[in-house]
Length: 152
Image 1: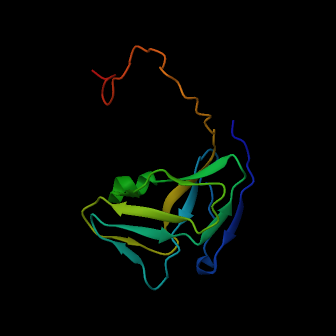
Image 2 (image 1 turned 135 degrees about the horizontal axis):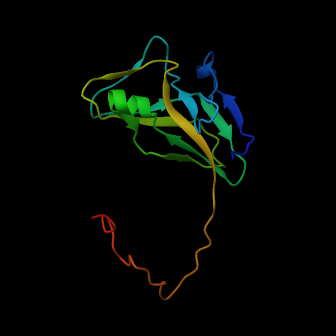
Image 3 (image 1 turned 180 degrees about the horizontal axis):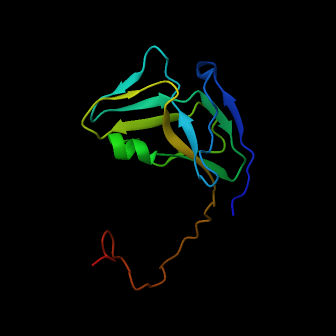
């Protein structure tokens, strides 16, 4: 069951004419973010390169929530383009423009055009940890086994 959370959103002047983020299906977890690059000057992401793509959006999340910027699976599967710092976190007290750090892992230049869906934003509740110093931790079957220790 999902919970509705009120998130205030503001579109900056360079986003004029672009749609606000929207869910693309009834049960979608993420709102699509659009590229707010100039119409006459698409951004071209060369293979192996990354760039910060503007969205022309600022948001005000309620305390206790974050927004996660995640890749769009279609861009990754078709072009090798993904979010570099995935998931990127937008804290509840951040009021600057949302930028999407994209990287091109593909083998061809990827043009980013105005209004293109470049990432998705998921609103999530945040649990804040209360750290409790301890002289020792409880014993588990896994113990200190790290990467790959539970596989065959």
